[in-house]
Image 1: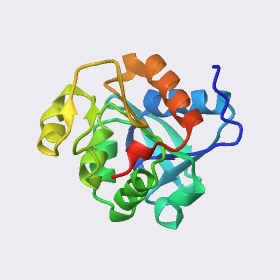
Image 2 (image 1 turned 30 degrees about the vertical axis):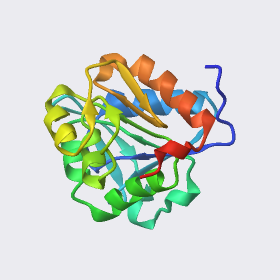
Image 3 (image 1 turned 180 degrees about the vertical axis):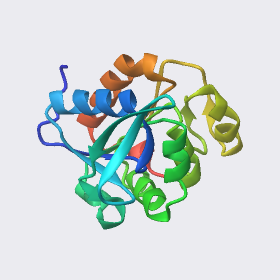
Length: 188
């Protein structure tokens, strides 16, 4: 990738169970290959259990509990999908507050598949254009966002994609937006 992230620290925020594995591993790999330092955050210490759709896959060690993390310590945020992951994550106020803090600071955020559910919960989609897994389009519209069916959408530092098939385009735009840094239009 042409954009280097050697001086960037990126948080990947997940629930402790239900992450779509490829939506965690491929973006993390892209970030690390671009030079970023990456930390996996979750509501509880221990491990985060990933899935290949509905089948249990690998477990990943949690680097930090989100309640102990400060968004100011990170340059960007990545939110993987999986149906259960964001549905659980949005029930944790500390996770929702952590997400909102990135928007308040104008920092890049990348969310794929079902992850925009957490953006809806954080109240940060109003007036924004984004995409997601198609079943979220009504939730996004009801929250004031404009939902489109596109491979990857960028809106002032917010990068969204629909599904694992979009990962190549998603990863490229995510790295590009993080390399650009703070986006004035990203703030809530």
